[in-house]
Amino acid sequence: MKTQGHVRLDKVDIIGNRIDYFFSVSDDLKKFFEDELHMFVEYEENIENIPLSILVIPFVANIMPLMWITNCILWIEEIDREYYDSLKQIKNAYQDMYFSYKLGGVIVPVKVITNKYEVKRPAAQLFSGGLDSIATCIRIVGKNPLLINIYGWYKNKIIQNDVFDSDKKNITDFGIKNNLETKFVKSNFATFIISKEVDKKYSKKLKSSWWFGLQHGMSFIGHAIPLAYKYNVENIYIASSYSLGEERGSCSSDPVVDIEIKYSSGGVIHDGFELIRQDKIRLVVKKQNEINDKYTLRVCSFNDRNCCKCEKCFRTILGLVAEGKSKKELEQFDFYIDKELKEHFSELMDEKIHLFGVDEEYNDYWIDIKKRILENKNNITEEEFVKWFLGYNFFKQRKRAVLRYRITNIVPILKRKIFGENKQ
Image 1 (cartoon, one colour):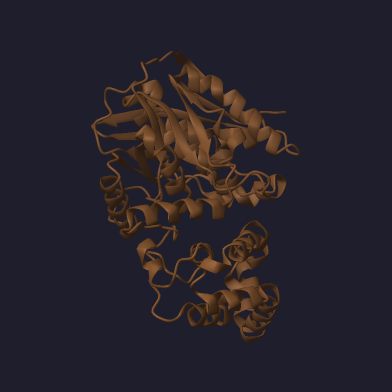
Image 2: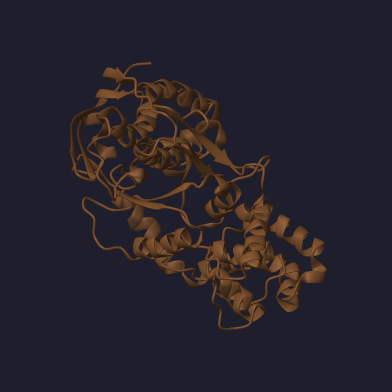
C-alpha cells in the first residue's frame, strides 16, 4: 500500500491551563482540515507540569484514525510509551470492525517516553449528565470518580455557549449533590477536522461516518488522559451507548476499542455494556426514589434543556413511564410538558414523525420499553398515554407522513436536489 501523505505536529504551546497544537499537512490531506491548522484544549487548572508526551495525546487521539484510513504518517516529537504501544491494539480493534477496508498509516515519534505514577485514585469518568453516564456513575459511585465533561464544538476560539453553560451548571449541581469532584474541558476537536469531507470519500467504504465510526470515543478519552495522569487515576470509565447483542454497527465508542487504550499507569473501562437502555432507566428511577429529590437527565445533546419534542426525549420519557413515573414525576428528571402526555405526543407525531428515526430505533429500544410496560403494568400511572403508544403504528404513520411531506414540499425538494448537486 503506497503512502499518500503526512501530518506533522510542528509546535505545541503549553501555557497555564491551555494546550495549542499547530501542525502542517501534505497537500492531499488539506481538504480534510479547516484552513487554520490548529487544535486546542483548555482545562480549568494549570497543566504545565504534565509531561509533553502525555499532553500530545488529545491531538494524537484525533489524528490517528484519519492516518489509518488514509494510510498516512503522523510525525511527532514525543509520546507516552503506554499510549504509543496501545495504538497498535486500537488499530487492530478498528480493523476487526472495518474488516472489508484495509487500514494503513503509522505514527512516527522521535522519542517514546515512559511515564509511571503510583495510583492514588481508582476512577475518573467521562460525564455528560445523560442517561448512560448517570447510570455508570450510580454503578461506580463507591470509587469516588472524578467526573470529566468535555465540550469539543468550539471553532478557532472559545466563545460563550448556552449549551455548555447549561451542561456545566447541571453537572456541577450533580457533583455537589453526590459529593463528587467535577472537571470541565473545552476544545475544538469536533470541528478542526471537516467531517463531511472525510465522509464524502470514506463513509461508503467504511459503512460508517467519521464522527460516529472513528473519532468521538477515542477523542473524548484522549482529552481525559492528561487529567487522569495529573490525579493518578487507575481507570477512566466511559459509559456504554449500546448493549451486548444489540446491532450497533461500527462505532468508535465500542468496548473492543476502549479496553485497548492505555496510558502511563492507567487504562480504560467501557462500563454498562451488559445493560439495555431500560435497565439504565430502572437504575436511575431507583436512585431518584431513594433520594426523593430532583435527578436531572440531560438527553438533548445540543439543547440547553430537554426539549420533550425529539425522538431521544420521547423514548426516554417512555422508559420512565414504563417504570411507573407519572407526567408530574417526569419533572424530577427535567422533562416538563404542559399538556397530557397522550395529547402532547400524538400531536407531535402528526407534525414531525417523518423526522424521527423510527426504523433505526424501533428494534433497539422500543421493544424493550413495550416489554417493560407489560411486566410493570400494575405500576403504570399514565394509562392513556401507554395505551396510545402500544396501539400506534409508527411505521405506517411515518410512511404516510414522509409521503405527505414530499408531496407538499416537492418544489423545494427538487430545488435542493438540482442546485445542491450542482454546487458540489
